[in-house]
Image 1 (cartoon, one colour):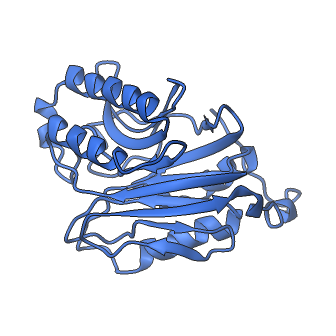
Image 2: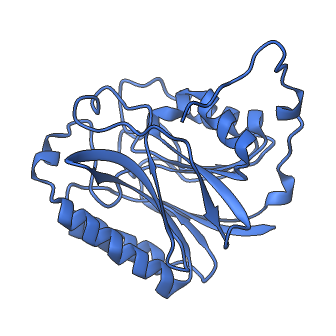
Length: 257
């Protein structure tokens, strides 16, 4: 099955209305049938300092999500984007999917960053999300979860055909090149396509890029500046060669959700 991807590297700010305008501008460039991928925190805003969360309106974020859901239907596209999202009386860090048939899915980040702990509610599941009317399944991961390969292996073994990775990775303390290497490894070791969207930021340390199941970087945007990456992929290139050779008699993963 072929899939047309458009991955956006755009600014994310602590202003729901401004972020929503960015989403509309990105989707205006998409063609019917595209899968559009945007960064972590795209609707709500995000940053190392989560103090602005104190003034963030849950109603405004939910209304923005409703707006994007309508946009996905009107433009006949799938839209992946991140947002801090209401969770009970608090907030979670979520990866959102809006489908052209009106369907929605939410992934709640299970492995919170240190600045998120005590402020956000961690998720407790690694769900697959459906694309193209259940013809394709995707797995969503967020930011620091790139460092936990067991999560990605579970998603691949459970049937994910593409990884969608949303991040707000802009930290001068990170060693250059490490997160890029992680992205290549997660794609190659699981033999899955990986679409990664990072925020456009001067301190960006993780690229916005598309990686093949062989670990080939098919396309990559320059760091720091806004841009759109377009590529058409063939999911038939996915494989189970390595997953099928795991020594489960010696070591196996157990999913507790």
